[in-house]
Length: 477
Image (tube, rainbow, N blue to C red; front, side, top):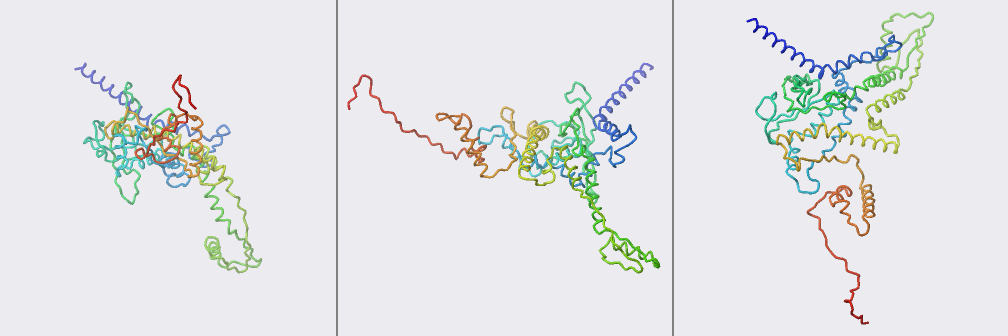
């Protein structure tokens, strides 16, 4: 009996130890990482050997939360722009996905992809854009892909399905996501990654709608995890507003303070000079009239035995402070000032800003939108049979051209590129060895390639050579 108790105690200790290890890993992945960062941030702003706390003097929040970022995104104009600028630019057009760029005929993979885009209940790219915005607000967001497989969402997804089995795809903000379990088996390729999520539906619903919240446990096989600007931890990114949070508070001071100062000083002040023999019979009434003059539209004062002299105030122009703050925000977020606030500063500067912005957006499309969001979703649909398998298990994502050019500019580009190809292949060369017909029509002319409507004209140039007589035959003139 004693041996049995000892064995049970040993097993219980082992279970408790395993549970503690699990909680430790989970905490590091969810709250632990962020909590440790927040703890370290409390030392920010100290100068003069810790005798002056600049964050306290300037009114900065040392430990803003994801909820704080969300509220600022909802209420502050420039914060909204910062969060939405990249997602709006990157997902402005629907990319074309193909597994065969050489033929016009649609492949089975391309047909099912186009069918997927037509499903109004899914709204694929609108949903991906929303998930991108939510990932910009917090450290990550998730996409819940609800498949009608007859199982509880907490169970792994298995089997093959059709497009009709995809019920909906829903994005979630980090504050509505709890990583309830992580993979603890070190031999598992997903070690340290989430195993199950607790998703809160209607987590940020409007109070007047009275939407009830519901928590659903979902297995990772039904989830697409999205995190941008990750460093050591792949599932934890950096909120878009984190590095500029102090500047956003400064901006509120400059803009709000400037507006308030203008309101107070634009009408000036009053100095009541009483006669030496005057007395105020009803001081409360006089105070009431002065307040009415200052705060309302009343433009006169009734005084007796007093002279009202105007006081003029000088207000400094807040524009220089505004420009400095916006420049710092632009530098941190890599969004050109002109793109950020829409201010024109000359044709050359505007063109350079636009080109720099387009280059950054293209880079983000390829490195983040395509590799972290779009391709994992397409691979999910291929894995579970919702999309037909592509040829050679390969497909290409073709993003729309971000720079809109005029017909005159396109014509000039086509002429110059055609001339360059002609010079390269030479008089007797074959241009199709350098560029295909489809590439020439689509990429250079910017037109739709209609393979079936192309008419190929085969003809032979008349020979200019003089027919030679047979050998050893005399030429008769």
